[in-house]
Image (tube, rainbow, N blue to C red; front, side, top):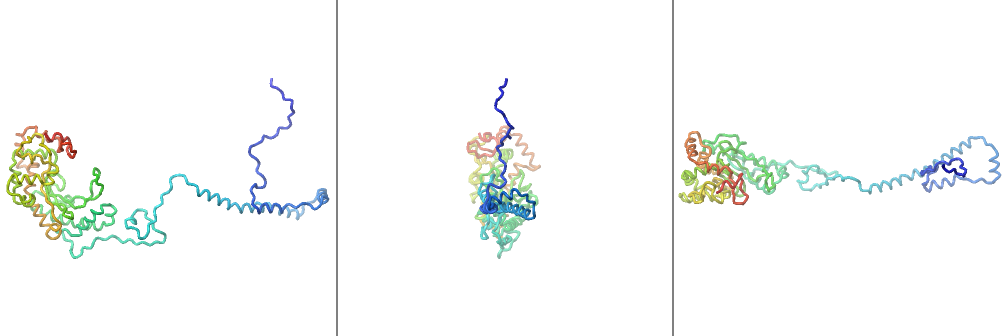
Length: 437
């Protein structure tokens, strides 16, 4: 049984709470509030007055109401000073809160640019200036033509100046600031290409009349697989073939670049495996055809440094051209003996002709004539390449007969691509080991 307590329990006291009742007067008071509270308390003069006042029943009067009202006012007045002092406390709290580090990532603040800042800074998106600053940015204009007018059949000196500046400032922001110069230079090259197209058609009747957009290369570089991050080429270029700048036919190529970088050339630059196999087969069976083309007076004088009219010297000069030598195989291609009499020609993966042109040759009224002269000298070489790789209908019969007499070993050897197997890693074909013995 539960034990009964002997202690008498009175009325149960209310359960104590941890929260205390709020005092009638605020605990925190200012000095003015405490002074007013002391003034409002007055002691009675005598005890009799206090007793007499206690024995008499005073009816409420207007004075009492006024006193009550006054006391209420005093109580309010006692609180009023404290309320006046609260802004100081809240201000101090706000100062403390402002010193705290806000959570999250701080908002980015754009720098304020000075009026004399670099022009490239002012063109940045979101650029800010100091308040009250007035800035006038002049609209970019193309470089003045000077005493030399722009003409369709010439390259203007300003075009070369623009390409020089582009080489020194190969950047999108710079080109945006100098867009008028770019448009003027590109238009100058476009009109020049239209005149060159007429000369190419005169030299090679197999080249059709094509729109200029089909022969001009864009100035933008493909940097997806390049270690060079510059976005623009530092030259203008165009190429002509039976299908324009693209296609399986041999090309005529013209490049305009300052400081002696201009170039006129043509041929096949690293053709595919099928085209290269046809060229090697023709060199193996009929080497005299290519040698006769290389021994022509115009080609020797224009592209082979004026070598003598000799097969060996012409072949040596042709295979030593930088465009051909840089991509040639180190060993003999598959299917051909390393002691082949024309092994130097068979090792080539590019069959091209070309030469550099100085600025004074390409700029001015004599530029078009110089380009036309080189194109005309090169036309027999382009015709030979197209006749072997892409023969016309009237010559396809003889080519088919040659192909039938050939074994399958040569075609299988070229099917692997044009790459090298010497371990240099610079081949661009599929299976490089199949191209060399």
